[in-house]
Length: 104
Image (cartoon, rainbow, N blue to C red; front, side, top):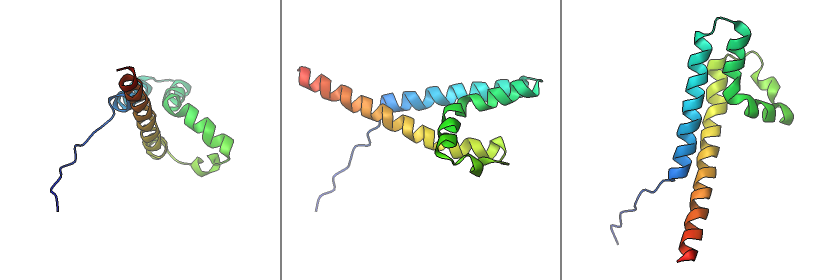
């Protein structure tokens, strides 16, 4: 049998999306802990996950998050978001590679 080594490939666009989202999220969280206003803190903590929370609410699953702290909600929402962002970036990267190959 063969000892073929598979090359580990990754999507640069997917990684860029993930890193960009993580940086923005980190900025919002750090900023939230420097704000003394409770409403401002709430808004800044909610900002990185607002769209996901809207989708969860629209699907009727928001009651699963009632009473949970931000430290629990963030991983539950952000980890799937990172996977989805990476996959979107990988699809864009693949599409770009197909266009580039067809132009040659």
